[in-house]
Length: 516
Image (cartoon, rainbow, N blue to C red; front, top):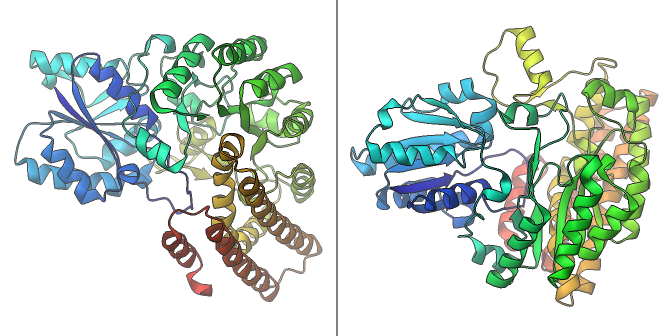
């Protein structure tokens, strides 16, 4: 059976310079190959193809099945264009059409209304269930499948074959990290997060064994010379009761194999100890994304999440070790107060974690989450299309503050995000390729962007608290940020941190067209 798996082009209003391997599709391709299928993977961004060319490549492959991986409804325009082009070129050839991914899993009704009627919808993790489609195709019983298919729980993560890596050359060319999945699911069940709606019949968290993860790292290092890895797990360490041993066994496995690598992980503070940090550092941990969200225990209680009083101790130790820390924060949420925003922003600033992303991030109720379902039930809606921005309940006037801050800081989005996302690669070059000077230059640019963000943020917060915000003042701040943003872009380009200066300039001009 001939399959094409497609990652459409994502049309997000936000600037995101990161392009990553489509790891979910790579797992599916590997699973299909175990039952004798021929698989072509197409990723619009990685293959540098527009929608029409993706459709033509797909049709030229003469597929028996075409699958789309959809992250959000921002992928729909791309998918429908690819589908239309492909259908026309296939001239009636029978094809099994299927879509999966976060969008289909968390918004099945919206997906059903938005996608062609002949396109089947596969919810949850499809590693095993996708093989059933192959068996039914061979038995000529595909017509028996319902339009919506809820995937059965996959095998234990260790039993899945390693994902195929058709984009390895591009990853190596640009010095990107190879994506690794060390676990599936999350121990938490935050009321605003989609995780609970993506589980299906699966347990909350399922981890690969340290031995299995190390085998894949070793294989990628030997096969492709890979040195930098990004664990895309929601929760790398898992339940706190087992986290220390998991980290120790994983670190010892890397060290015993003599692997000279660095890697990043996503963690929850309550899974950490000093010993855990030190063990992972010795194995190559150099980048951490930590969910901090708030410094107020009552916020965590409202969100259905456990508060960790030791968070800042872990941040301090990680940074002392030279591990880059990036924080997931929610300065703005339905229960926010101006006093709480100032307190948390000061804490973030103290630890160099107040940047463009943390300064403007706001709690949105994700599809499939408790808060999203609560809102849907209250309003009677059945298909909203994406996240829901919840209003400020305690201080409704914070809406004005939030809109003022996001508008004034918007010219800093592109240089700030570009610098932040370039750090893991620069850090690898520092460690393995004599890139010390380049790394410190990037850190200087990143720090300059963060300082500009913080200065503007607190100036507007001061004006808000004194009730003297004026359009003239905020327009002036925005214009200053625009000039500063262009200056930082020039520095990023001249230092060699930008692959396509023209595309970066165009992105900045589109974002700030009214000021150019």
